[in-house]
Image (cartoon, rainbow, N blue to C red; front, side):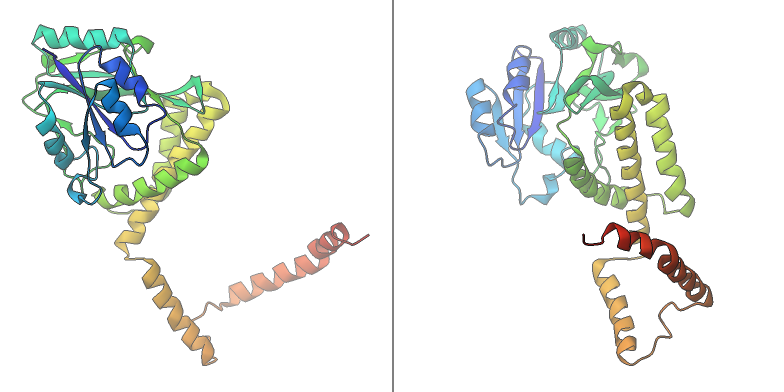
Length: 317
């Protein structure tokens, strides 16, 4: 009888779903949670021997993979006490999977903690290392957050899980979760925009002006220096900047939420200004003495210095 179920969340992963399924089936059951893929993800998974369940797109109660609602729904299809909670772009070594079975067989553990390596730009020599990751656990060891209270958080360890019931694996290549991140900047920004919307909503801390500068700056320092991304060259620097910008986006969206700034509220505000302009009333439009003086200086500099340079460079020969 199998001791563990490997849960894989997937959407349109036909090109790579075989890798984790073929690997995991050697060590346990595989349950694919398909997010209504439009390619052959589900059929390939079934042919390989995985059990497939379809996550309905119109069911908002289970639209967040790491939520309590999702866990309650998925666990109905699990027959083992232990699960691995993962995704189609992740892999493990056979040494690590064998270690899982060894720990489970011992009968005195409830949770496994290990490192998590995210590889960047198709280069397995450049990776971001997360030191504290738990994806393998006995059902009941974690309390999942409700869907409107978390983003990319698997939950918290229950109080009834004692320290000696947690297994820490060595932080090396053989016992890490390997995340093959297929992201370029365009895809990353699109995803960050979606995630930051949710993150800003579930973050219970109020917006503070200082955090707008402090949090992104500290995030960069943490990733670039503490996680030694400076050793990973340009790719490590790019990733550190990208993540700090994500933190900045979250803080800005918290500010917008707190002040009810929406596209509709902005348009309504501008409509008032436009109405005043139609009446030749500019009293509500910024027209301070400082701005007037500053703009005159800019115009003068442009005429005397920048305009001649621009005209010379763009002169038709």
